[in-house]
Length: 130
Image 1 (cartoon, rainbow, N blue to C red):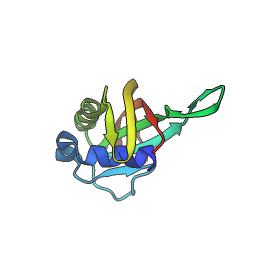
Image 2 (cartoon, rainbow, N blue to C red):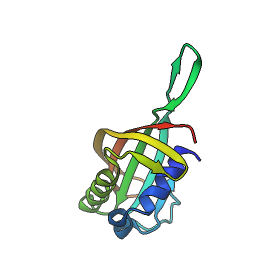
Image 3 (cartoon, rainbow, N blue to C red):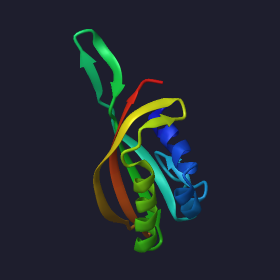
């Protein structure tokens, strides 16, 4: 299972996140007609850990999590719920064994095309191969 799909399933099962976005957690891109607020997950890098013997089976991809809403306060509320659900998490996300989730950065943006406010949270997810 890909880490973004595992993270999607995990967030859909998180009560605070689901209360705000329902089923509107998407991988890579959200449909243009999707109701807001919503969340988009995008893997932006995928470094791996190597040893003298080769690939160790441990990866630490950076995942960009974008909370998008019609009001800035709603985007912030969704991003906060997501951050609280995953920051420091360790355990299984579906079939993926997550060693740790670290929040790297948060930033605000505005999408002029969709007229939506965004709070973007970048995380590193250390995990072993499924």
